[in-house]
Length: 317
Length: 228
Image (tube, rainbow over all chains, first blue to last red; front, side, top):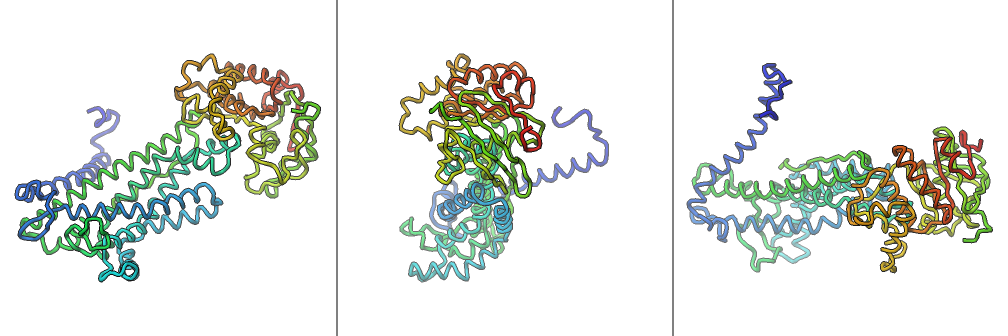
């Protein structure tokens, strides 16, 4: 208990008590949320059993299966990742390694601003342009599909991933670049042979944090995903409408409140989402911190190098 | 290398960063196989002069240069200079010992991977030779795969020296290589560096007049950007 009760702290001081209380409330709220999700989803687990995870239909009053929603969430975020990775990493590399410092700060400021744009605004853009464009290009009856949602998500998480990956690249100590240059390496050899391998944990962390944000995004996805609770047929045809967990919750929560199993099924889906995002964010944050810490400590045996700036941008959904 | 040519010839060199004149009318001739020390107070331009010899200042904001520098007869600020080859031939050792977070062996062969990619079979031999020259071989020969960051500061500096020597430079520039080391490690570095005279021309920046006296065949004093 020593770690909890530092003998030098006056525990009866009102300021200590007050801040202690706020700390308990803050951390307790997460625990409460988790408990709420578990307790409220118990009825659906006892009613459906494993069928809740393996079934393929969601028909209120009859059967509930989270699988099409999980499939939709994973497909949409996975595809978004495929679209966004080359763009985000390419621009992060260029900004960090080649752009003159003045322009670099302009690009960074823009990206950080973009990362804070509310999802609904992206959703509006998606409805007005993206869905129409997908409909035209693929010759579809309806442009609201899994593919459309993945494009939209890619655009939404691009600034997050780009700016965090760029931070990870900048956290690689300047000394490494100097030494490599003094050894006669070219700029691109330095970038790909020295900087990128060193920054890799941080870059992967950035990608995972972006992924976590994408997975939890509700409104924008809801507007363009199509809202159909079943697996596409064939399963890989992403030009069909689908459903992700958050978009499902956003659509039905209000009407399902107090309606028994339907409500419990939604809460249980929320629990599944919570766990998926939690794992991704935890791994991402760990890698990001590890990467930045490693870069700082390994160089010159002392705390050389740039200060890392880890910004956690997830958790706002 | 052609020993009739001076290793380095600096003719009326001037260097500015933007408006600020850092070096002015420097004329120097460094004989092949000699050790020259640059010393002078902080801000006298000795590091700038050193780094100008391998064009490591090129990317500093506002850098401009007048006059000429020849390395074995070749004007290194000429249009046809291959920067990568120049920096291989004119090696630079930094003040702070800094190794890559890789194994000892990987650190030594780091430059070779890029400069002699087709001769990988030779790397173990070249690495041994470089470590011998830097006086580190006996201490690390049984643990070449150990992480380089586990070495002491003095050993890391000698590893950095070996990393540069592996490229078989003609000129070795040392930017206060012992300034951040304890006296004993500094002595070891000094001893080993002196033994390199047979294969390279050395230019050594130092703060310490006693050290300059001890090791320099020629001593160059700088003051406010000019030769004193």
